[in-house]
Image (cartoon, rainbow, N blue to C red):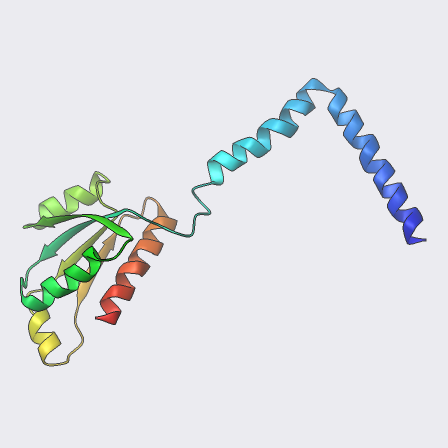
Length: 147
């Protein structure tokens, strides 16, 4: 009984495929649409982000903050670091898409680390590519949390 059902379904699928293949427009759609989807959605499903460029403002400029930044530099996921002095340049790097994330270290970072208080490090992600931004900020959060 199941064999008969499967044979009928196979015959129906074969008939439909032959009918669609005879029409040149349908043939183009069968080939073109999956290829188009492959190219469009290839970046959307990537779950690994590499070569992340980072803008950094280090207001504390202490041994502790440099130690944190060295952990970023030693990570294989981060590529280029722009050490900046002001928020205007920080914003400009993100707005022009030269960096994917920005890290802002407050001036009380070392005192918070030494006194074992929670530290505040701001991570700013470029939200135009939401998937990559959330993954990159997750990588940065892991490094900060492990510090």
